[in-house]
Image (cartoon, rainbow, N blue to C red; front, top):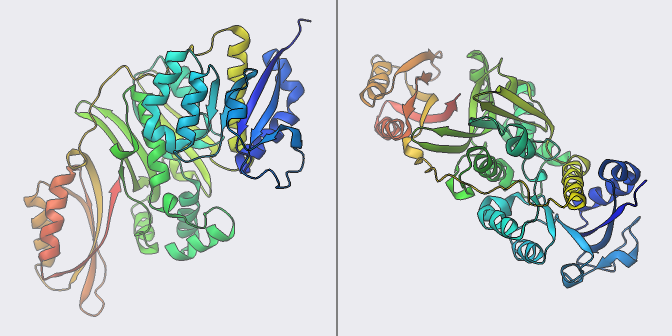
Amino acid sequence: MPELKNINIGLMGLGTVGGGVYKLIERRQEEIEKKTGTHIQISKVLVRNLDKERPGVPASVLTDRWEDILEDDDIDIVVEVTGGIEPARTRIIQALNAGKNVVTANKDLIAEYGAELFETADNNGKDFLFEAAVAGGIPIIRPLKECLAGNEITEVMGIVNGTTNYILTRMSEDGMDFDEALAIAAELGYAEADPTADIEGYDAGRKVAIMASLAFHSHVTFADVDIEGITKLTAKDIKFAENFGKVIKLLGIAKNTDEGIEASVHPVLIDRNHPLASVRDAFNAVFVHGDAVDDAMFYGRGAGEFPTASAVTGDIIEAARNIASGCTGRISCAAYRDIPVKPADEVKDKYFLRIKAADRPGVMAGVTGVLGNNQISITQVVQTAAVDGEAEMVIMTDEVRRKHFNDALIILNEMSSVRKICSVIRVY
């Protein structure tokens, strides 16, 4: 049997994900050797506090100096799981320029500076792998880059934030309002102490930017993604959606159209029979449409210590195989197209509109007249029984450009008969 090649890893960060990666590599050492023909070991771990107790991790591998990893010529792979933009961006670029391969789980960084990182990796002929950056343990990056490479992909959409999906599950199944469901998510550890990135859609927006860039081979950044969170949703919205045979999910959607790329994150009504409608609790799922494969869905746990560590370790194994075979940097992430991102106002959507209005003759005709005058066709209308002189109208529209819909909303808000526009939700 040939002698195993030694592959040394410099691990940046020993938090939840970093700790999971360390444990998983230790646990799978013998299997990894058989799968890669290499002996992988974590030879240095960058931490902030050398005095902190770290059970199971020898003190001899710990360092608080980045230079101990960067300047060590024996380190072949740098694994970055610290998060944030800086110093991660600078250190990853330094590592690639020093001839090291890089594995990261840093969605924030890739969504902002992916083009620069991909180019640096290509220039140095090194692997830059980031499977864990989008959907934790669910493989989606490698399928987009490799397995589905024979397709012209026109749409990628999915549930890519477990916190919001858990909240919406509780609101749907238990009739909770948003604040109550968020509190339970926090108690169970699904929501961070500051849940803003999740509930406002920013986390999902970063993931959409990454998936769109890979699927359409054109750079899409976080700033290109039109984002709305779930904080305005109510149990009443969910109940109305059920009456229409639909459920509400926070979806990240990227489409490649003849007019440009559409990239968005919004609460969306989807048919209860759609595969994404059955994705519950903190699970994630990504739905891909290609011209050859048609529809494919990837489902599983999108976060957590070992699901995320699974994706990171898979990337480490791929990099080790490439190093052993002398073919690092073989699959580029470079965008060879320059497709414009469509302005949000030009995007066409269907809408769910819930209005409180005065209960008197002619109000319904006035509301529908405003919509018609702004090129908005109506597919369904439901009006509830009046309470204290007010009734609720729920209107489902056909596809309309957002600018026309927003023009109609301005006029509706100015009508004395319209007491309140309660909800505006997109319909898939």
